[in-house]
Image (cartoon, rainbow over all chains, first blue to last red):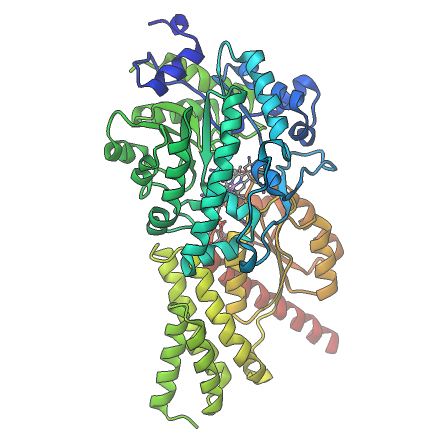
Length: 344
Length: 230
Ligand code: B12
């Protein structure tokens, strides 16, 4: 089947629906703004997080410039924590690319963990801005490619609203207390994710990188993290992806048990092994290194890596994390070309 | 004075208290060590620290993960707080002092905290600036504390470049300072190119390198002093 037999949008939607497609799509559920895209509009990175039009333009530019098969907002991981009441630093004084971070935490000690989810969450922080950005992006490129958004997983969000060291220790010492917090955060995430769906998102990626096996044991993942991921995925109707970076081979099966339609892993995952474990029909996205291959590799290395991902059995060619903004155009083009040439 | 048998028993209990992140036992037996006339230095290094070394091995073998590591460290600190004031200056063998932090724009501090812990364990004076640290702050803190060493951590390729500026500024202000950098995107190559004195892929090696660097620094100083004297 020639490549134009279906639009990139149809290909991805068919993939999620479990239908046959000609080749894996090449897209992502995480940020993929590039410095080339920012240059095109004359936008500063620090400015695109707080303006819906700029965010939508920047998100759509990766498709327009390189044919990347999606548009995704936002670019930072602070939206949900901000809506809950944390202050965010976007580093507006810096010319270089620095990603926004949480400036003030919501929970400062173990005693403050019993938080209440503020009412009117969908009107707080940048949630309205996100709604608008999704709408604008969808209008711009939504006929050709899928529109995506991402939220954090409850544990990773907990690490944004309180001191991570405390959270990590309590996840061991007082799992009940942590569980209660995760349950509330899961509720908040469901509300926000549904709002993104209403705004037109075709799929949503839940990023639970804080629970990677580089940090947490697979046992704690299963007992403490998984139940709240299951809660989230059971409540969402749109297409869903669960992403965890770092070491994930020992938790890949649990990730699938979360109820997400697809799971996403990074370059540290042995995808061939994971594919064997989860079977042929499960959707597995991954797993090229967005920095060490796509940014700093040669075009040959990019092609080799991408081919390897597909041979190892990924259902979609998809990065291990956010696309790194400084990706050289030649490398981006090489990746797209390699995927388009591939036939199963 | 505790008998040899009793000494062994207390050391073993302190070691296990750290491994099993038992803060109560660490507290109780550190106090007991003092009450029974044991040498504080002995209790620290052959008890608590020896436990932490085992914890490091368990972490590398992936039997322990970050939460366990942090809890073990808490047990260690409880013991250190009790024992440290009783260490005789002479055998403290102060290893040196270090300013450490994660550079501006970067909130990844799990790795940095582990490196910091290793320095604490080895008896360094540690000045922890935390994460997302404005670049000038490293220079300021170093000039204030006259630390032997400055350690920079970065987990992202974008924030990593901030390290170069800190290295240049530090070396301009004090050519003798030793600088060590680390974090996932950092490499030996980068460390050399940017003029850092050391790089290490993990916390255990970081400590070994630091100790080597500081002893060479001390030797240099001694030689310079000797020259002046003659
Ligand atoms: C947990 C995590 C987070 C947490 C951090 C919480 C915290 N307080 O630390 C949260 C969710 C907040 C987060 C946010 C982001 N993250 Co993040 N995160 C991770 C993750 C999953 C684990 C990092 C970790 O703690 N590892 C475990 C520790 C023990 O290892 P370590 O840090 O490497 O430390 C060891 C050594 O490096 C060394 N070492 C460390 N420091 C030093 C210092 C010295 C002097 C020496 C000698 C040695 C040394 O010793 C340590 C112990 O052995 C990694 C992926 C991964 N699995 O590595 C991504 C990762 C680091 N994140 C990444 C990204 C892109 C982000 C975001 C930009 C995403 C976004 N769109 O906003 C934001 C950054 C926000 C900001 N401005 O800082 C990328 C960075 C890509 C790159 N090459 O630059 C990574 C690599 C993911 C990926 N697969 O691409 N993240």
